Amino acid sequence: NIATTYRYAEGKPERLAGLASELAAMKPDVIFALGGDVAPYARTATNVIPIVMAVSVDPVQTGLVTNLAKPGGNITGVTYISSDLAAKRLQFLTEIAPKISRVAILWNPDHIDPEYRETQAAGRTLGVRIQSLEVRGLPDFEAALQAAATEHAEAIIVISSRLMTFARKQVLAFASPRRLPVVSGWGPWAEEGALLSYGPDLNTIVRRSATYVDKILKDAKPGDLPVEQPTLFELVVNGKTAKTLGLKIPQSVVIRATKVIE
Image (tube, rainbow, N blue to C red; front, side, top):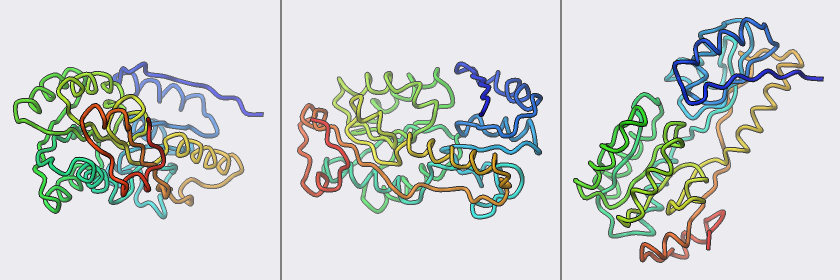
């Protein structure tokens, strides 16, 4: 008994504002916005129609909500962001590859979240030098990755976003022949050849957002529904990649892993 209308920007961010306006003009009962790069356009298009978001940005820092517990306004939903995730990724990397001392962080400064800062802080604690590789679009990746090679980075940590997903094959293709371990927050990276991923399960997060749509369709007010943060995290380790890199996965990591790919 629900009619669903889709709009898709086909990887062209310049189309997002127009598509969001189209959806708002239809006056639906609720708009679902998938991604921190999409939700702000929905938020701009309407301050009346309820919006449910699933985002990997910090929704408070980006101004999507006033606070997580009481978002106010017409938008709520779920975020992939949780404290300590970035530090844990670096920790897992150093447990598997304890000799690593220089790590490049591939991140998009326009994608507002705390993970780069957290990784920097964790690097200071663990004695790991952090190199910043900033990318804002697909044309930036070649130069950023070459900078990692020039500075003799010994691993790459990818701070997840839609942009990084688009460039996943490029990043892994760069890292593989150079024997650079790659770490990310989203499971598909490890499935496709990264050394490990640690973070929330993406499918579970999106399914959780469906419960918000359900509540709003039953007359709940989005401003009264707290923005949910993940509480369960998956550690996926690619054993094949570890062997190729000459790394042995310690038992301390194996027993914490959700999945070890052999």
